[in-house]
Length: 154
Image: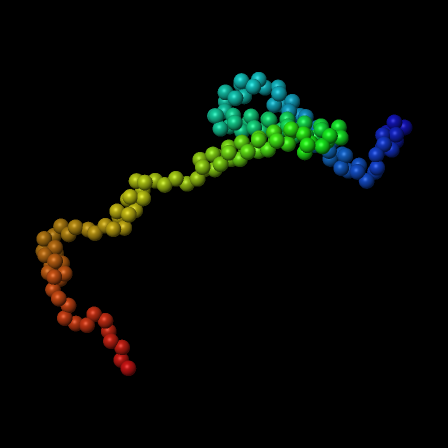
């Protein structure tokens, strides 16, 4: 009989949505319990500074989002509360961290490799055989007697 009274408190149309909300809230609770069970110092010692910043931003954003939801459940408009500015501030810092991460992943120019490509593209081999060298110089210095282009016949 208690179960019948429980379902009469709200419209049946939102039953599926409430079940989904309950499962989501349970998963958030287990994640937060897992995060809170570890000492903060142990967790941050294993991370590099960028990952520490990501963890701090994620924690702050999560807590502020939960507070936003709390304000909504209390009938307070969170858009008129200071929490909105705090969430925007955190989002700004999250975007900065994302830019830093993207810069790390971006391709970098290897100046040495680029110089080698250019040098090899412009490479002209020195002729070691003096006879060939003399012949190529002679060919370069002789004037061209024939027409350089074929003439079209009409």
